[in-house]
Image (tube, rainbow, N blue to C red; front, side):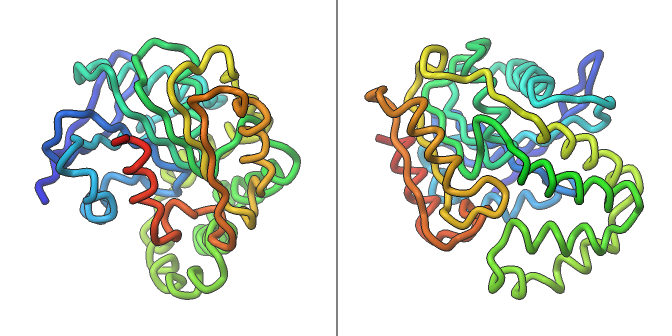
Length: 267
């Protein structure tokens, strides 16, 4: 599959992106928090989301290359909106995973870009003590330069044990390639998770919304989907689905997730 890469440069930030597919509908994917930029994994992402390639042109936007200290989720949403607009995209379908879901929610609430449909997975309307403690541990490892410990703890947290053991060697190898700048960049993005409280609510998110989670999500738990149900459940355009036993990274590990997501966007 052809992968098209690009870079958005403005007066205040630089952001990498890539796209694939040939459909007439623009689907924007915002990935979750990662230690290293996601763009080098473009082929794997395109393969994973190949079901979308006929009906959609899929765009994945990374985070900004050089975030300032104190960079918030709303800052991420603002810069991502500007990056999307710079490509001339409008009336987008939007999917965000984990922290990417938080960014997507802010974008949908602000209405600076026309979001036709929004899906979020393993995300949250607000974060509590458990998420803060987990991300604080990651931040400490990143700032101390413990890339091996960070990758190991990160993998154990987001994946189920069997999936973690399957990828433990891959994670260990990736840890050996991490730069100091990447660790510091990761720490800034991770800090934005602590104390996050979304501006999105039933009144300002007017597009169809689909929230997905797993009951054993070690970061947000089943309560994250329950919070979406409580906030948006009275709206006819809202739906949710709770998996069982697939961990925080359910968007990667549930075998039918991509088809379920495709069904929401194409219906």
